[in-house]
Length: 265
Length: 253
Image (cartoon, rainbow over all chains, first blue to last red; front, side):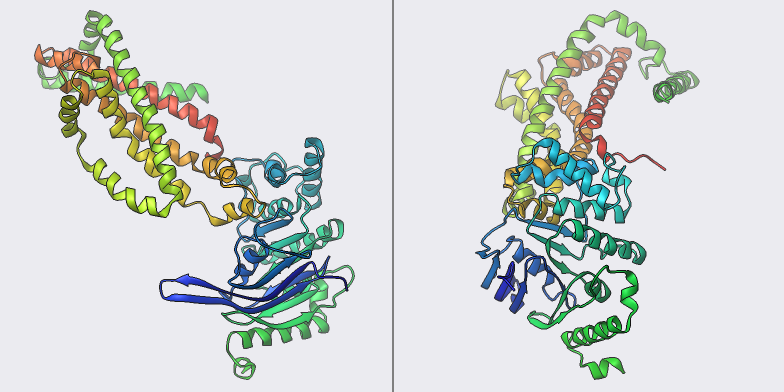
């Protein structure tokens, strides 16, 4: 394998609170090859969102290093795309204008016409054709999340960071969006980090699942996922998937500080 | 639909006028106790030139006071919205300042800048109306969800870009809400100064001379003229809001 695109080495970080420093990350290791898609799971409040902010260059770790494409991350860089649980679309813009927002900030070689064509193409890819001129308030939660996804990749970022993007959606919409993600990845290859609470989501979307320990988080367990080919929701119901989910569930229980034996009962 | 939007408020005003007329008639009040709507047209006919001149004086000073309040209020709101320290420092001062009844400030200002009548009037209109604007802008900016900032910051956008592209437009609905309150407050400020200070300018002075001469129809005519100007300015703000923050309006249902 060539040099990893994202590399996190021995990262430690603590937030300063009134009660003293609160360590959230302690010895975090993560490595994502180009084109890889890693899901990060762990107990709530274990520092998963801190991890996304580190990779995006929105904050610096107290200790350790974050590398993107062989360069040390020291601040925000335009080669990153982000989507959150809250789609944070700008209410005063149309969906098309929302998707084009990053292109107004990042310099691209595309002219206005090409920018618009690209945004329209992405919207069609995620199934939002015909909604380009609607306002975000006129769309459902799932549709807003689709638009937010388009905005995250419109400037062709090297790295896509997804921080529980489907967390607030109902189960059916979520499964629809998982399939949309595969469609997008097939047409617009990206290297991604997905933060999630949903183990099924992690093995369905990612090719590697990283389990973080409880706070302060370190890398506790890494699992390579081998659901290959055209992924279909049915893949989640095979014995292999059940086995993988079981292993991950045990790891989460360990991370929560419960021993698997007592948790299973 | 739009015809209905105009006819309904006009009908409401006519009903209000009729009820007022009925109240005065039923109590048999002479017009030196309470004037009735039918006393107003003669008063306007008699003093129409004064109404024009003084109405204009009141209007322009109110608008200037309001414009200054917007500029100052937005600046203070920005400072408080972006800086935690400044918010902690300025909030008690602003609340205290706002709690002081402006009627008590009027004589102080009048003595401080003797003879600068236009300046004093604008100053009071400004002082009474900037508070809601400053508070709304600061709240709008400080409650901006961090994800909005992160979306642009992760792309390497500067603070200025974030302000123009996100913080400012997102604050506009709150800003216009406050501006509607500020419009009526500014009229109160202008009239306070006009009534109290002995310069004989503006509708407030006209009201005062009505009082001195026991000309009740004139006093009521002034009140109605002020109400009409307030409505006019209010709807100017509503029109601006539609242009700049129309996106925030949800179609009911």
